[in-house]
Length: 220
Image (cartoon, rainbow, N blue to C red; front, side):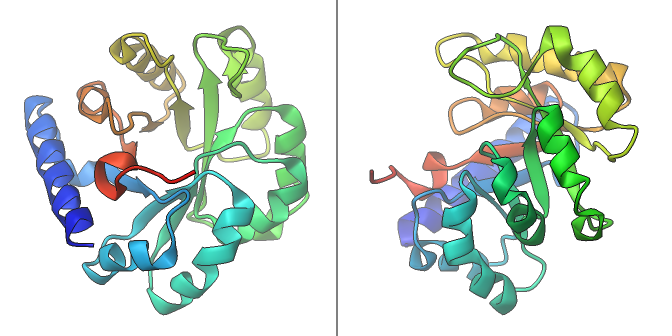
């Protein structure tokens, strides 16, 4: 557990340095610690020192470990950063403060079936598949404008999210997403993970998703 806290402090320092290089305020960058496949006991040390922002990839896994923690520790913001199946929409809206993976009309329509579940501070991000990778979810660039304009008729969209191709230069994609957000007057950008969050900060990331650099290697 000491290793996790040591890693956490190292990442915070890297965020501070990157924010300084970008002439940005560190406070405008949310560090979302990705706790996929890590148990409650691994997470608690971070909660005990006051960190509030966490991310999970799967609704069912999050449902199994976070409700009690949310009751025990106040002001936790839990972010869904993996694909959302429509049949788990209601659970997700109850559990998560932010959903980063809005990517299709069917999902938007399902969210609209539960208006009472959308809180004032709920954040909704559109995931953009910038490289049109078949194995990844996200709206394509070609379909983005139509999808976005339709979604904002009924939903408050807070930002954009992307997952750059693994072996490409992430900066190209971060710069493109930044321009897309600017064009649509969206302030929030969910981009950057353990390997490239420093570059993401330079290109305006407001939410970075860091797992292994803090939590260590995942098992399974």
